[in-house]
Image 1 (cartoon, rainbow, N blue to C red):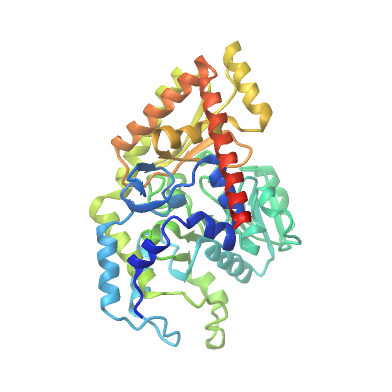
Image 2 (image 1 turned 90 degrees about the vertical axis):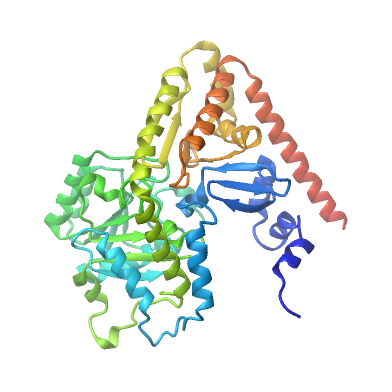
Length: 469
C-alpha cells in the first residue's frame, strides 16, 4: 500500500491535541487549550497561518525566527523539489560533498575577515555545543562565562550556559566550569578573567529573553578585556543572525569581531533543520589537528544535502530581494510607530530591539484607576499584564505573539523579515485598542478571565471525555 499523505491527514483530521496529550507533551497541550490557542492550522503562506475553518492569523513569531522568508516561500520550495528530483547522494559520510562546501563558502564570504571555516550540524543548540568544545580545545582552558537572561539552547552544555533558572531546575548537576555574570557587567568579567582559565565568553548580541541590548562602547570594552587575556568571544547569532536585526549578523552593529559565531533558524528556509558554527582556521585546526582527529567532533546529519540546498536558496533570496536592508527599514518604522503608542499609553514603558526583533515592555502606570487595574492583574501572577494582551491579540485580532520570558512584562515580536507595513498596521492598531481598553475600563480584564475560564473548562471536559472512553 502506497503512502498517501492527503488521505492520512484527512482520516486523522482534528486529532492533533489528543495525540500530543497521549504521546508527545501533555502539558503543552494543556497550556494551549487553557489559553484558547488550540487551533488546527492547515497551511501557512508568507506572514500568515490559516486554520481548518479558513481563519487567517498574522504570525509574529515566525517559528521563533525560523521563517525569515515567511512560510512556503516559492524559491525555497522549488529548490527542494529540484534536490529531491536530483536523487543526490546524501550523507555518504566517507565523502566531501559539493553542497556543504558551497554553503560554507557563502557563509564565510558574508562574515568578518577572521571567519574562515564552518562546522555544520542540525540546530542552534548543537552549534553552541560545538562552540564550547572548540573554545576549550583552542585555548586549553575550561571555563565559559555567560550572561544573566542568556538563552543558548536546552541540550546539556547549552543549558549550563542558560541565564534563566527555570530551565535548569531538576537537571543538575550541569556542566562544570561555567560562570554567570550580569549582562554587560564589565567589572565582574574582569574579576573572572584574572584567574587565567577562561576559555570564552558566550553572548547574544541582543538577548532574546527580553530583547535586552548593550551600548556599542560596552561591547567593545568587553571584547578588549577578552583579547587582553587570550579568551575567545562567541557570538550566538542563532536568533539574531541572518538579517533579523537589520544587519546580516547582529555583531556588525557594534563593530565586534567574534572568534566563533553560531547560526541556525533562518538558514533553514523554514523547511530543513540546520545549524552551523563559524570560526577561524586556527581554532578549527585545534580540534581537527591531524588525520587521526578528522572525525573527533561530528554529527550524523551534518551536511545533509536538503539542508544545504535550503540554506543556499535562502541566501540567494536574501540577495535578490535585499532582505537585510528591508529588515533595517522596518526596524526604524517599528520604533516610530510603537514610539507613538508609547507617548499615548501609560502602560507602554519601553520599545527595544533592532530590525524585525522588537521588545515591547509594559510597566505600572501613574494614574490611580489604571494603577489599580495593573496591581489587580499583577497580584495574580508576576508579569501577567503582558499575557492579558497576548491572549486577546490572538482571539480578537488573529495575531500570534509571545511573552518574551517568564517574569518579564515584555511582548517580543519576531515577524518574518519580509513583513511590511500591512502587518505592522494590523499589530499597532490592535495593541492601541487593547491598551485603550486597559486604561479606561476593566472590560479587557474580564474578557481575558472569560477566555481563560473557557479554556480551563474545555480542558477539563476533554480529560473527562478521554477518561470515559
